[in-house]
Length: 252
Image (cartoon, rainbow, N blue to C red; front, side):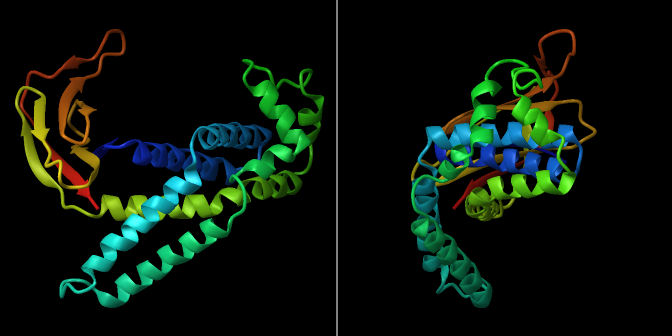
């Protein structure tokens, strides 16, 4: 299956963007070249931009509290593994406590680094971090791999609690519902959602062998899926065939 995910509110949208950026950092942190270090810095700047536009600490705490409330209501169900639920609740409480105790805006300390500040100021210019633009950055990139790795790990450290929280919350949401098989007539599918239920995320699974991609639009009341045929030299077109796919409407 190729999975296409579509967030149904702004909070989950931001969480998923950060999730992808943290995964990019993981990829480049495993490697040691100068270009990998540059890629980590570039991705970290994107993360900082998201943090500057959102009160993420507050948003994550709201979501953690909401999950704790929902899971506590499940505690009396005989179908629930009590020991596992208790472990999950303890983990959520720990994340919440650590976020509450984090002073100031997350990532603020990173911008106090003169090196990182200078990189940030030049990064908005295409090619603006060339050696002749930022000789101090060029000097840093020429340092030993271990030295660069230590700096990168230190810069990433303030974001670890946020990443742990987002990974855990998105995992809960993705596992909250079971996929069902649906059929899109002539590549088109539309469904109305019960607005009284807290839908968070749509997941559309398409067999890898099928020559379509899923284009999803909508909101928490109704959504539309169009299965499109890709064309490298022209605009994608909607399939005229019936398409079988798996749909998960995640509620938690």
